[in-house]
Length: 129
Image (cartoon, rainbow, N blue to C red; front, side, top):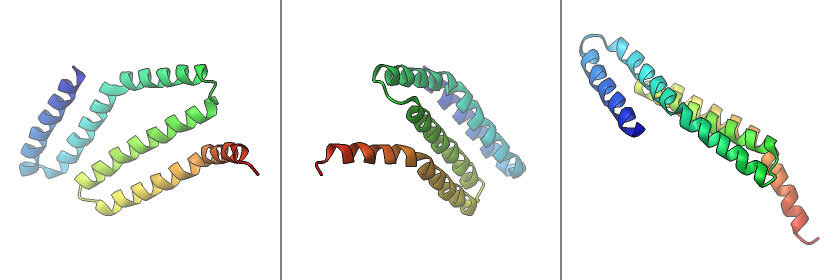
């Protein structure tokens, strides 16, 4: 039950952060960041399993590997940017958080253009002219 480990780590970090904010509030962000990284490391093996499964399904379905790679990268960007946005919001830097959100959305859209254009080509082939 890895979720229990994750929740336990998060609750312990929360207690430490609450206690630290009273005496040394500048260290609270470090605990928050460390906790996030630790939780990400805990779920890395699950993430690797998901990627392996997606790759095997893509091979069986004869899906272009480039598209699968792009989708995995886009998903990674979304997760990492959400992590960074959360850290910024926890630090009280909402303006920086919103800039990260905008930047990551633009990057995701630009990375998804090959997939979108491929889908449009397929749709145009299917539609009668």
